[in-house]
Length: 156
Ligand SMILES: [Zn+2]
Ligand SMILES: [Zn+2]
Image (tube, rainbow, N blue to C red):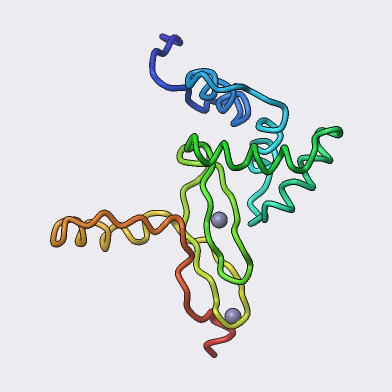
């Protein structure tokens, strides 16, 4: 089995998101800093929808000595590099996920009444995406926003 790969770094059983992110940073000529790795470790370790502040708190716990402001800058930088995505959740603010193959792709539904956020499969809008592309040449990118509606409890 060939184990050498010239392609971009990939997540495998033996390499977690932090290692892959470190490699992708190096590939881009960017610095691998403790704060950047801490952010990735926090995001890789949860399925919750954390705010920047919560990520800061957990990163500090993970690696004592890291300053909160450094964590926020790391979060911004990882976003610019395309390694972290953010989703606007209305009143609940903005939440962050690892990008692309570093985390399961999913979309968000937000209840406008109670604020609950539900995760749904990332391909759920693919038929719509294809139709818009075919008919309008429009590239739908629903990943950065939560789709707003009423949850089961509030609609009832
Ligand atoms: Zn609700
Ligand atoms: Zn999510």
